[in-house]
Each structure stands twice: as structure tokens, then as C-alpha cells.
Length: 357
Image (tube, rainbow, N blue to C red; front, side):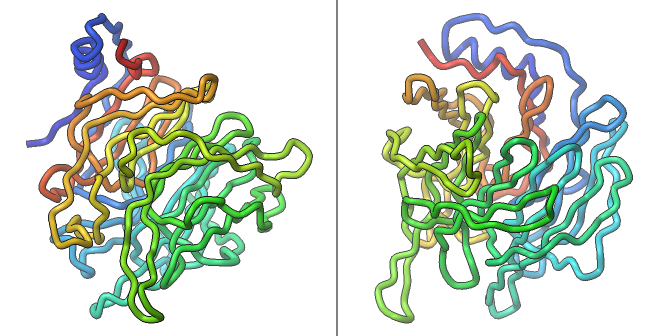
């Protein structure tokens, strides 16, 4: 059974949680995706005055290496349309997308072979939000997947940490969409991670959680959750200089592949995820099925404190982004309870995410 959480339904849940009423605004519902998919890249632009949504790559079907897709879809004029994908774009997981001036930039991801060998893709694409044409961009200097992409000054895209072939990297790679060139910024100060989440307000970014690698020998490694958060402030004179500082963690428990975004004012939202890091099929590295979360974690930049909305949404995890639109926030598909892939759309209004009193 498909579950599409409407604005009024979400507002009702919030009211129950906080014992206050929440006014719901009306926005057009987004239809479920044509197919269940998870660990996919998402983006949003404006087309002819309306929001349109993009889905790229990801995991489908029976969640094996053969079920990784290179499909791309756009939600335009109130229905989903397939997009033509360049032949040299591989089927990948954990790619990430960002939007600048109604142009979508799609970064990397990783391929999985039949023997489970993984390879990070260096490819970067610009997808025109109007014509839907794909254009190759300069490749990533260090190919990463499972990274966080944040946009600054509607020009620069910061790729923060992530996985490169066999290990995480602490790199912060900056793509200048005007010059179409790459620069290296101040490294990520926490343990390098993959599957983390983040948002940006002005020149301040918040990045949390993910999975770090513990090398037990030269050939043996294990994966461990990293319950840490950092606040990065981009220098006003030099976009490659970031002042990083630790901030309090939301709970002491890391959540893997949350959906995250900011309200562009002072609040950062981290939604869903799993407290048990897992392989791409949703089974934890400990061999146990990973549970999805229904919680919303809110960081207030002004007071540098967290609030939590518990059991607010349907169980959800395995995300690559939370989309902020003019009317609210959108989560496209993902993984639900018991590792089930979803085609559902969760959407909620701007004023719905209020902390409990």
C-alpha cells in the first residue's frame, strides 16, 4: 500500500506531538514515483513557474548489484517523465545532486560489480532545468560517492567528505559552476565519513553523522557509526577557507543516510535515517536488518541547540537529500521498514516543522 503524506496529514501529526494546532497550507500533491527506488540522487528546479523534481540512479528491484539503475526521471506538469541518459553514464548508487540557477549538477556515485567490487565514478553532469539536456562537466579531482553537496552563493557546490573506492576521504572539493573549475577547501575536521548529511544557511554549514572506517590491519577494516557534528563557516574573502568547529550532537546516536536541508534562516532539519549502518541492500554490517527512523532532528543555529520531533513521519531512510521548495519540503522515495523500497512521496509545509514544547 502506498503512503503519501499530505500537508494536512503531516500538520495533524505535528499537532498531536506538540499539543498545539498547526495550520496547513494547500499545495499540489506530487504523485508517487513510477517505480520504487532508494539511494538515489534528487534535485528540484523551477519550470514555467512551478516546482519540478528530479530523480537519478539508485537501487531498485531485489536490491542486488544487478538492480542498480541509471534511470533518470523528472516530475513536470504534474506527472513523471523519463529522461534520456548519456550512454557513458553508468548505473550507480550514492550519487548526489545540487541545483544552481535552475541547472542541476549530478556528481559521481559508485558502481557495484558481480563480485561486489565497488568503484567511485568521477563523472559530473549539468542537466538543464528547461531543456533537460545533459552536458559533461570537468570530472571530480578525487571521485567520491555518498558525499554531501551544499550550494553557496548560488554558484559554488561543496562536496564534503565521502567514499573514494576503498576508504573515506576528508576532502572538501569545491566546484565553481561559473568557471567550471575545481578547488580544494579546508578539510573536514571530523573522522572522514560516508552516508552523512548536512545543510547550509548563508555561509554556515552543519554536517552530521555518517560511517567511519576503522582499519584493523592493512587489509581488514570495519565500519563504525560516527555520532559527531561540525559547523563550518566559509570565509567571506576566500571560498576555500572554512572555519570548522564541533557542535553538540543531536542524540549521541548517529543516523545513517538521513534526509537533510535548512530553512535558509537558522534551522537545519535532519530526517529519518538508520541507527545501524548498512550495506546497500539495507542489511547492517553487523548482519542485522537496519531499522528506519521516523524522527525529525532540528538544529537551531542561533542558539546552537537541538530539538527533536519523535515519530513524526513514516519510517524512512537511505536518502541523498531533502528538497526545499517554495511551499515546503519533499522526500522522494527511499527505503522504509524491513528494507522495503518505496515510490512514496513525503511532503510537508514550511511551518510544520516546529519543535515540541
